Amino acid sequence: MQRTQTVAMLYLDESDREFWAPSLKEVPGLLSIAVDGDLTHALEQLGGAVANLRLVILSSRLYPVQHPELARRIRSACPQSELLLVSASGVSSPPLMPLYADNVRHLAINPTGSGRSDREELSAAVEMLVARRPWEISSCLKQGTSIHSFQLHSTEDKEALIGALEAVLAGEGEEYELLRQKGALLADELLENALYDAPRGAHGGKLFKKGEQRAMLPGERIVFSFGFDGGTLALQLTDNWGSLEPDLVIEFLARNQEAGSKSDDEGGRGLFIIWRFLDQFHVNVHPGQETAVGGHLQLSSGLNPEAPRGFHITEHQIGEAA
Amino acid sequence: MNSEPTEGFDYFALEGNIDAQSEKYFKDLPARVRCSQVRFNFIKTGRVNSMGIALLLRCFKEIREAKKADILLEGLTPMHTMLFKMTGVFLLASPVVSQGSGKGGVA
Image (tube, rainbow over all chains, first blue to last red; front, top):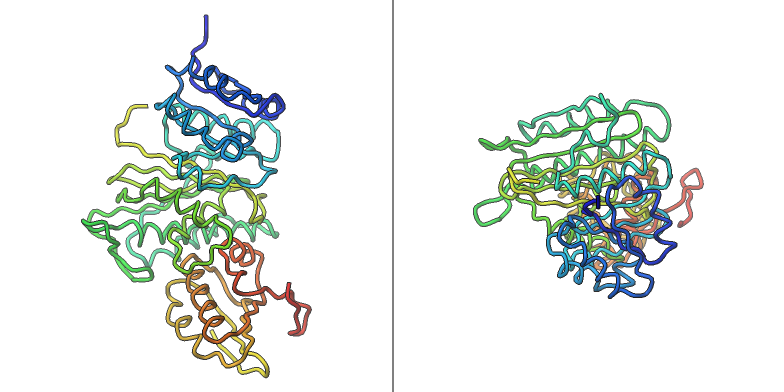
């Protein structure tokens, strides 16, 4: 019996296909297409499976530099499919402006290692996108890892929560010290976003100025969660404003990524910093109801400002069927 | 945060976190610059968040444009260095590689 193909991947050529094969071999029913210089033929092959396709994966050797029109052509052929760009960890990060223009909201970086857990990580991302399921903080942590969750009562809670996170990351040596510093900065940015950027008035204006002391508004709910399994730190911040616009997130990342940006009022710098310090960045928005921002990083991630980082920016309606 | 008059350059030692609470300090700082070189010491600085980055950029830009002064940064941690690289701070100010006893060279 023929298996239904819900995921397709387009490669530049056979060597590109071979490179990705180990990372994607756990993806069931993968339609694998090497362009090999004939994009029209590749898109015809893709068109044959269009009815069931939920996700089309593009190699960064094909898009956005080599074939900048590719995302638009796939969107017109398979409007119901999500697009995921995959890039190798050893090459520079793909430019994000074309992704912003083409509304490509998913970028995965193939991890440095080739171990089983690395393959599982990419497979898990594919599975999440096929199921249209939002990221969960526990999904990247070892089974049984405690998740610590705190609901904020006022801006005064911020430093205590950062301290609680640092306490969970207790350990000696440079790697732990660096992870504590990164964790503290990530928590700071996540909390500032939820406290000052998320609350919006009826006309979309910000309700509070950064640094202003305030208590939570009636009905306002901001929850900070984190877990550490000894190797991976995962963090998530949810608010019940749902005011973050997915298009704006990728625009912020793209604009801040532009080399030479030294504008003192560059919007979304906090989100850009969060993305750069996480190995994988997740944003999930239920418009008007909830925003969840978070992701994970490894104890061994190090500090490389040029290292490519992935993201998944999704928009769901509450109660939306997968 | 404190400053001390030093012959040949202005010197500012930054302490604690740099964030929205530091706004007044950095707004007033450019007016205190007198020399053609300004040194900032980060050895006692903690977290610098995105608001802190915005304040530093605004302050450094004004020092360079209004005071025509060069800016040197010393005592940076690896975290500060990564953060300043990715946000363009080093386009306005140069990091100094410490060579001990207060002397330095531009990285």
